[in-house]
Image 1 (tube, rainbow, N blue to C red):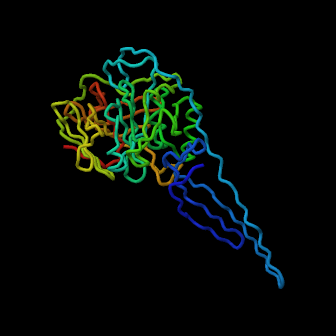
Image 2: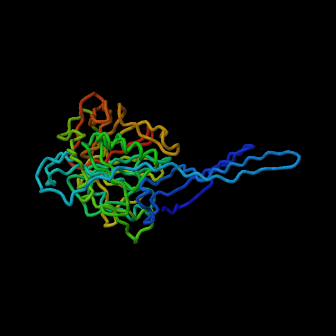
Image 3: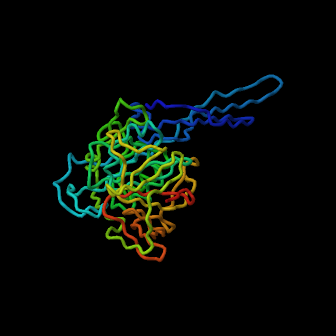
Length: 382
């Protein structure tokens, strides 16, 4: 059984006849104590005890009913995928998430991993993120951010720290061609939506069970000690065929301007600075270079700032969802320039279209891309 990380009384509602106590039970990513019956552990309101006391007063007697204990709701179970023992032979193709040729295992789906960005502990444990083809940076609670990293052309040995899935991820994953998602857990509402998405072949959710392809690293503290092997995760695919979600090619914008940096406000402010020597945008956070534990600075070839609307999650009032279907303003940074324009997509299954201020279609330079899902007014550039 699961040992909760913490148990905090949430509220007590009293009447003349009933006392109902509910606890906010935090059993998310609590380490190796998680078992298969708690695969979907997360911040979840779980009824623990309902004690009903009925008191009838007469001139002679008082009768008190015995406490009645009820169990919580049955957990929502994510279907366990069938994972192959390995991947197929390597084929040289145009990588759909890079726009350049790469040698990729035949039949490999897009492999997406939810990666922590909570604090200095998670950044100290960071591994593998520099190998992602695409990184989506999404807001979770308040102004904190988390990464949904898409791997396909390069598969590092390990990626992490792995963290929980969110409802925002569904729209992000939908257009990747039946990808595999590796994540640490979720609350029951997210789990229900992920199960529906799996049933409709939108993506293949693979939740941590503290068994392969996931593993704990005792050198780091929970919850930042969970990592996943993306090669083994990719073998859990179900016939996914990755397709490009961006257009790559020579610069087409007629309104691009020289740019050296872009700054994003969040709980931990971060920025990307153009490095002409490497042709990349080097990421810093909290005023220091954002490095993997091996010392590699995160440095994508493109940075795209999608200005999106965030709404309160219908699943969890403390979380927010990014609306990435529709249209809005966008900044596209490539080759030391910025194009201020817009983004659009009509359906979650479509790729993104970028245009400049004149309405001309804007492309990305072939290579890796970092997409920031940013609220309006949270970014500046120079």
